[in-house]
Amino acid sequence: MVEMGVQTENWGKIGETAVRRFVLESGGLRAAVISYGAALQMLEFAGKDRILGYDTLEGYRGGRSYQGAAIGRYANRIADGRFRLDGREYDVGRNEDGIGHLHGGAAGFDKRVWSAQVLEDGAAPAVRFTLESADGEEGYPGNLSVSLTYRLVGGDTLRLEYAAESDKDTVVNLTNHAYFNLEGADGGDVLDTRVWIAAEAFTPVDARLIPTGEVRPVEGTPFDFRQEKAIGRDIGMDDEQLRLGGGYDHNFVLGFDRRRRHAASAFSPAAGIRLDCFTDQPGMQFYTANGLDEAGGKGGRPLQKRHAFCLETQCFPDSPNHPAFPSPVLKAGERYASVTEYRFSR
Image (cartoon, rainbow, N blue to C red):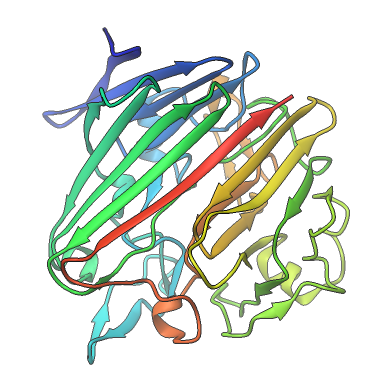
């Protein structure tokens, strides 16, 4: 079925709930998104899929690595699964080996079937996913209404538009967990991919990968990407933070405000493809797929360590427990809004 330039198809069921897949196309860019987890399932530029993932709904349901998923209510980690808000302590669970809260909990937004609508608000192909998260779900306060719109712009840009409202004060941190490989889903490791990140500092972590609260300058460290360099150049250095993360798995400080900025770029010399990331978020988790180890990726290929990288735009990890970090608090009746763009070029 084709609706407003967007092709839709049934992609299976979870119980009695149908899961749909939507294919958007504009210029040299094609994207497929599914209503399970509001996940980005395919992102094709110059005739080749540039993200990892799975070919079936069963892959997304059984996967452990959040491939392409919408992440919430709170992306990244919360120490001990606890935080205080308005004088009350909330327990949101410890779904990461019993030591911390990761990516919204055991049943985060990545494991929900979202409602979906093809938009008719302009020439750019777009699909809007919406979700209702009940007060107390995964321990979070407030009935939260969330939307995520995927939109193709200008034939080379995927725009992600997030919005949320709550009837109680709550915390919100939304992101997308796409695993990029600019040489393609079958491209092998990404150690030769060259990366630039507009960050003067990053947030070091402890053994649980929870930020310590320090904001550390990148200068003189392997975390300095202010000049474009290959991912593999420094990833094997004898550095405590690299050892703790098994590579790069850290929040880079883009700023402490919410203005739109050019956050990062990645370039594959082998493919001749560049990806630029723009966002209004204060942080970006740069992750080099250090723990990726799954069978059954696209085309039956395994998903392997360092065969992708993630540019997860977001608030800082564990911000509810660090008053000096940018605030993730969404006040009752106020509106959360954020935009991230991924732009391809040759």
